[in-house]
Amino acid sequence: MSDQFRELLQKVGSGTHTGEHLSRVEAAHAMVMMLRQEATPAQIGAFLIAHRIKRPTGEELAGMLDAFEELGPQLKPINTPPLVLGCPYDGRSRTAPVMPLTALVLATAGVPVILHGGDRMPTKEGIPLIAIWQALGVDWGKLTLGEVQAVLEAVGIGLVYLPHHFPQAHALVSYRREIGKRPPIATMELIWVPYAAEVILACGYVHPPTEAMFQDALARRGVRHFITIKGLEGSCDLPRDRTSIIGVQGLSSHGQTPLEFERILLHPEEYGFAGKEVPLEAPVDLIETIKLVLLGKSGHLTGELTAATLWNAGFYLWQTGVCGDLISGLSMAKSLLLSGQVRDKLEQLAGHF
Image 1 (tube, rainbow, N blue to C red):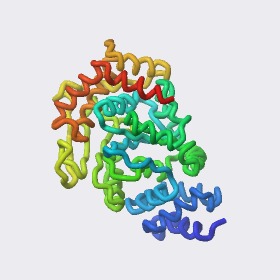
Image 2: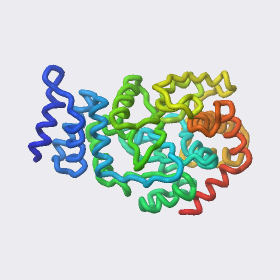
Image 3: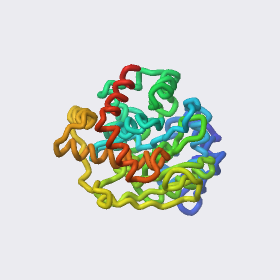
Image 4: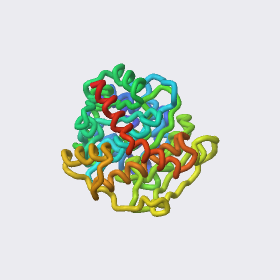
């Protein structure tokens, strides 16, 4: 048993009247001790559920990210700052993920994209990104971190896979099932950047207080450019059945001039993209639909997923500065998709596996 960890546990687990928030240094120390298994399983489980009940602060998330930076993997800098897409590790259970298609469109346009995550994970046990990529012939789980780096440099897409590239963090996944709740680690993962230089970070969330927590943590960490999205199931996928609530820090709405936090409300119907969200199909059907989108095929379900892809890719082409406005981004995304260039990008990517 770690006496040092017990002291930190006592702080977060003492209840409403006597409990205390951890400092950034303390939160980092607690995270390091959990990653190194210096705390006992009982201590780790107690800490995670107590911290969940207390709710983390931005300062505590910043400390946890410090620990991930100290012990976790980091891809090396490349010529163009990448877009890092941070989404819930426990996947999607109701709506079809658009992110792999968005990443392919962006990479085709010259915007590098970094993703991260693991296998099916509690509490949602939804379909993870790794499973979609594997079904498309891209098995990130086979690569070392150095090989992911090479693919990122050659193709413009990379995925940091927790079980192989950060086994210390992967070892904590079992606690999620045992405590039956998402721990604060699941919140911190949304804003983790496994990259050793400046990025544009996009992070999804569900509950509005989480956005303020992100702002605080990222400011403490010195992250200058980030985008917050009240996305589908907490992901970075923009909705089409409601107004998209977005926050942008460090970039103007056309991706150029630095500025303070800016609120953007996008109404899909104003751009001809309103529609129902695409329901999550069986994995084999989802993959077939994705392939049809890449081929530019039509049909109701395929058309809806195509529209979702264009809506998301167009937005990110705008926000990363490739296009000067959203309409231009939507037009460029459509041109790249329907010309077959995005399909070619997938073939190029799959050729590295």
